[in-house]
Length: 366
Image 1 (cartoon, rainbow, N blue to C red):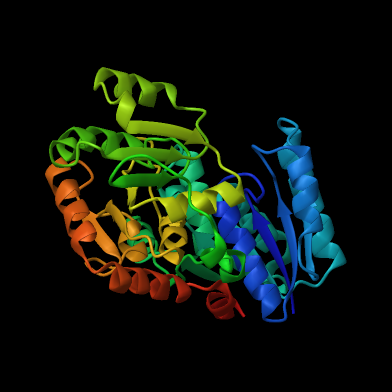
Image 2: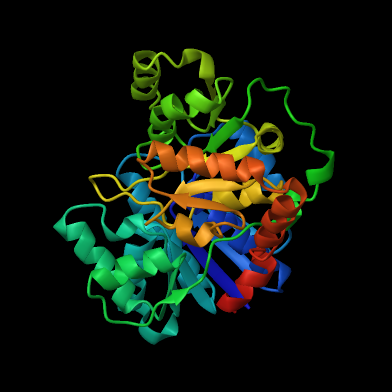
């Protein structure tokens, strides 16, 4: 079997869609499938890209599209068409908004000769103007099969009155990448409890919701400290909020961490927090893969209800789901997590994460 995966992003740069595509590809390779990837690799260095490409497993080939303005799209289409003519792919997997639209073109050109399967993360459904939303709708309709990363994302599709079968294929982890859990050395972070969010600083990731809740949390936990890891290009509004609320001594913005330091961060925290929210332009949290990464370390999570995090967190078992804007509920959830039997809670989290191994999940694509 030989599959083509067209994705809007790919490691070693940040981005949930890219990491999803990478872990999915490795899972498929593990199960005997040859994989070709067409992607961009953004927000990283050439040295990091070179090192990453040399680490890829056998039977996983990457065709990188370098950014060059509008020509980026032309180059991507040209390479994809060339690959589809050169190889007889058993399946083309489309993940990310522009790749979904390419699926329309592939079905128009090749018809039944090419089987396409769309992966829907959530934000594609609402982001954009009427034209782009129309294209996304058509892409979902024309694909031979459609997978949503969560029940929440599936509901978003159905809310658009798109009449077709939607399979829920949850997000997952490349468990082999986390095999060093027991030997990772934590940071000597200050504070208790130590709260952690991993993700680019954006409204969708909801770091501001944790910050606003800190005023309430401090009443019971005056030594609480909130650590924010992730691409911090948009941190100015966050720092303004921190300064306005006079929380400078309770918050550390760490920026984008290396893989090694990210693992250490998960090992260092007491509670993982992701109070995501939908933005006005339609960006939503379709799943929340960082929750599973935290769970690998036995770290329980607090996440937003009415988002894809409902599929990532087992309420009252691996964490709690709360109203992202209810500081009292956030504090109560922290209280309950800190009061639970740490061994049982840790085992619940690790067991839940292991159920999301892409070596298992990828079989649904075969």
